[in-house]
Image (cartoon, rainbow, N blue to C red; front, side, top):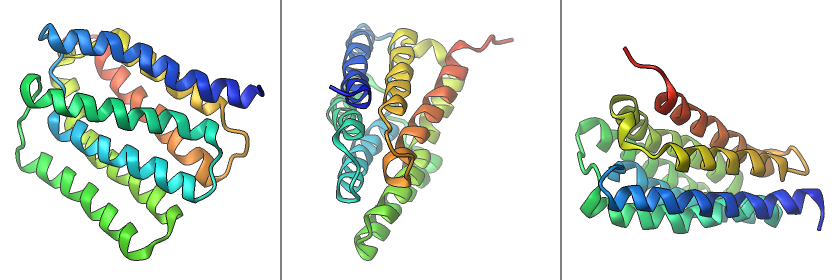
Length: 189
């Protein structure tokens, strides 16, 4: 197993480990996942994995987004009962931006455009979550998000060729999680 393959396999394993305390905190009522974000993320993880695969990304960098589709779909389903289901105008705009980006990919048929638009769409989908975590950091599980950040670091280490198709999603992922970590760990007041 190469260095890149090792980290490609380690990234979703770390994410899986992070998923366990996150699920526990959801069931305890300590974490209230933002439904708008998690539903959109699940769809986008599927699109990101598919478009990167069609674009030629190697399997070590595809494992994490593939696993994220499964786990994010699970959290999205749980958000129906246990989450923050506040779908205000801003949330609808963010999700609409995500759907629009996916439609543009369908029209163009270009996997690189799809990957870029998926990253942009994911950023739109993250806005409700950023807002939720900034306002209510106590409603998120620090351990789960911290382990998720490390899974992002591992997928960065799995990149063998720094091409757009192989590295763009991973770089975006770690930056996104860094924002969440800032809101969770910042001192308030």
